[in-house]
Each structure stands twice: as structure tokens, then as C-alpha cells.
Image (spheres, one colour):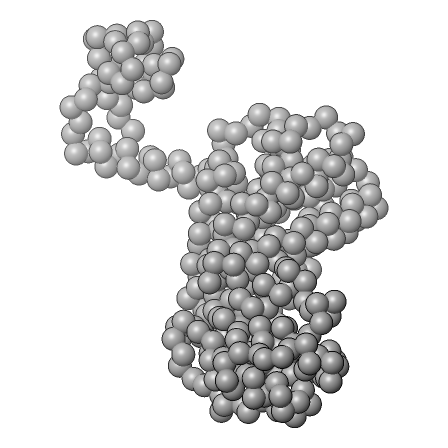
Length: 336
């Protein structure tokens, strides 16, 4: 490509520092004439595109076919030839969740588009006194009711609340809790969680499970920013004898999750043709095999050690993911 003429003035137009050669040693800007012809603009455009494409293709080549090598090269300082791992992760996760949203059901879960037939709860097992109390809007003489009916009978009625569509599930739950002796009632955390769930059921009707699923799906990218550092922390714990900083383990975690997102993108595209959700489960196998060899190559351990560590790391990661999701669900119920 024909280059532009150098400026006679050796002062950088971007940062004001002195430029000894063609490029500024402080900010990296090229010290050339600012007047560009259309031909120069077109040439720069194609040069930037092909340069980025070559970096992307090389990055994908090492990421897909050489597990752990890209992370190892990053640790060794080879970075200019590859796409920045954080930038690649953000872009890949964005594409994955965007495609995932297009493949989900199109109905709005926050609109009560359908209702089950109203279920008449059978309070005969609890007692006519409790039924009258509920119908009147409050529980009267709950101590007397608790004396004549066992907690098991009342709890059996609580299970029927999952089928209630009258809009009174939260109220009925609170009333039944009051009818049970304090020693038999749900604890603070479980009681408040169930109360919030029944409030959502009263609000969204038959769509309550779809609403919860929708909230998790839309916030899962945010949850990943909590799980990524946790995954890197697990790597640091398991490979504490290796002379790696926490940031090195974080790069491995980013590359690993990027690979999984790319597998997910491929799975979504194939599923658009085959229409079989079971396909996603099959993609877990190559993801696990990749993880094992990535550990082996990055941390220079034997294959047996990599398999054992991979199982233990995934078990801890699954437990951490479960805890994060449960805490997120509790947060959802707390703010509804």
C-alpha cells in the first residue's frame, strides 16, 4: 500500500510529544500528513479489515484446535498477534445470548395469556373452622384450630396452593401458617420465599414459572461475571503449586468460557435445522474433553491429573453456580 508522507514537524498531533521516527513512542500515532486522499482511506479500510481478520482467524485456530495453547501464549507475552481475550469473550457471549433469545418462545410471559380452570381447594381435611376463617378474610382462633387439626393436614392443604388460580394463594399461605404451631411453621427464609412466590403466582397466574425462567435468562450474562472470577479462583486453588498469578487463571477461564459460547453458537445453528434440543447435551462431551486437554497443556500436568482435577473443579463450579442461582432467585422473590 502506498504510504502517506511524513510530517516535517516532529511534534505528535495526538499527544504533543516529540516523534523521533514515523510513530510516536508515547501514544503510537503515525506522524503523517493529515490530508488523506480517498484512495488512502480505502486502502486503510482494507488493511485494517484484513489485519483484524488475520488476528481473528489465528486466534480461532489456536482456540479450537490447540486447547490451552492460546492461554499459554498469552502468559508468555504473545499478545499482539491475537484478539484480546476479554474483547473476544464479550463479543462471543453477546452473539450467543442474542441467538439464544431468538430461538426461545415468542410469547410475553408477563401477560396472563392463559389460565387453568379455577381449582377449589379442599379444606375439609383442615376443618370447617379454618374454611370459614379464610372466607371471612382472616384466621380466627388459630390456636383452637391448631389443637384440633394436625400440622400434616394443614401442610397438605398448602401443597394445593400450587394449583390455585383465584388470586388468593399468598393470603391463604399466610393464613395457614398462622394456624400451625410456631414450632411447625416454615423458617424465615423459606417462609418469605414461598410467600413471594405465591404473590408472583397471584400476579402472573399460570405464567409464574415462565416469568422466573425469563428473569434468569435475561440476567445470566450478569451472573457469568460472578462465575468467571469464581472459576479462576478454583483454578488457583487446584494449581497453587504452579507459578501463575490469579490473572493468568482468569485468562484461562475467559478462553474456556469463550470456547463454550462458540460451541453453543454452533449448536444453536445446527438445532435450527434439526430441531432437537437433545443436541445441546451432546455438545457437553466435546466441551469436557477440551477442558481436560486445556488443563493438561496449560498447567503441564499428566492426563490422569487433568481428568481428576477437571472433575473436582466442575463439581465445585456446579455447586457455586447453584448457590449463585439460588441467591438470585431469592433476590427476585424479594423485590417482586
